[in-house]
Structures are given as structure tokens and as C-alpha cells.
Image (tube, rainbow, N blue to C red):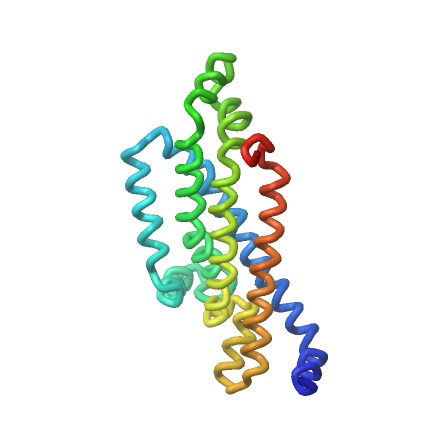
Length: 217
């Protein structure tokens, strides 16, 4: 235990720096994934044929091993001089985020009570007003569940991004494996787990804050 505490004391600044890098990568990827996935999920509720194609494509993307997808990104982004580092990892995480976000948004909007939708239409609400004032507030718990899944998933996958020079907590784990240093491996693993727990807790608080109280009573 004494050696462990000494290790943490010496390496705490570096662990904190890598944790911030990891969080920034995941946060930016999720932000872009939300900007794409939520509007697309809403639109797919109006086009069942396209919905089947998009959801199937997103499902296939999620089944691709992360190390394989990162490997594919290298030659593609090498064409613009960004074969390794932040950009390919960022794009891969955006792609991995799409299925839970699109699917949950699509499912949530489709399952909104038709009577509430009809009432909104009867009140003269336009389509965008109905979506923002009625459908999204009622669908929020399911949408947030998808976002929380995507965030926790990406925090784990981002560890692999260290192999293509994207930084983050994966650096500790990969260096620990190559050096046979259990302290590095354990430190990185614990930091990833703590980051995932904190992120999920924050999103849960946001979900509870903005969820219609009538839906949880």
C-alpha cells in the first residue's frame, strides 16, 4: 500500500492531465454525435424505410472491433496528414455513438402518446413547436438513456485510441502493458472507471432535472 500511495503521489499530475485529455476527447465526440444523432433520430420517425437502413448501418458500425476501426482510420486520414492522433479517434468515437443515440431517439419519439401529439396539433402547434414542446420533453428519459450509454461506451473505447496516438488514459494502460508495470495498468483502469461513473452520474442528474415530473410519478 505504501508503494501504491507513493506511486500516486508522484504520478498524480500526469494522471489528472491524461484524465482531462480523455474527457475532452469523449465530450467533443459526444457533442458532435448528438448534433447528428438526435435530429436524425427524430427525422427517421417520419421515414420508416430510411429508418431501417440507418439503424442497420449504425448497428454494423458498432460491431466493428474498435482497434480495427482505428486501424482503418489511419490510411484514410493519412491522406490529409492526420493518420494518427486526435482526429481519427474523434471520428471513430462519433461513429460508435450513433447507434444508442439514434435508436433511443427514434424509439422515444415513436412511443410518445398519440393523444398528446394530436392535442398539440389541435392547439395549432407547428411541427417544430410540437417536437420541442411536447415530444422531446416526453421522450427525454429514453433519449438520455441512449446518451448515457454512448458516453460510458466511448469512455471505454477511447482507451484503445491511445494506440493511434490520441492520448488519454489509455496511455497509462498501454505503457503499463508494454513495461509490465501493474501500477500504471491499475491506475489507468481505475481512472477510466471513475470517469465513467462521474459522467453517468452527471447525465442522470441532468435527466432528472429536465424530465417532466409527471412522467416519474
